Length: 82
Image (cartoon, rainbow, N blue to C red):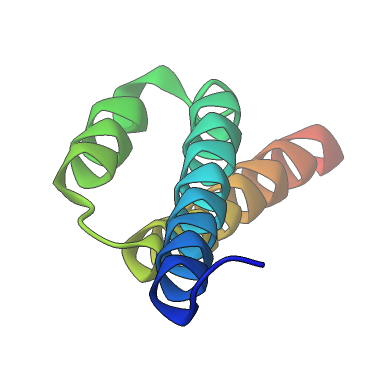
């Protein structure tokens, strides 16, 4: 049976790996979503991704991307009605 200190260290490493795994998954998601944004706006979002320092920052960026995609969809819908 591992010592208490070793168990603590292993738990910390596992937590860190899970956090990094989530961060990588989020970055991959943002990269995919960036390709859906109209090219004229893409650079601003890429810059925001590069400036993101925490997972929370990335979540906020995803919210902003969702809004942008909604705006783009609404514009296309309105243009098809006219």
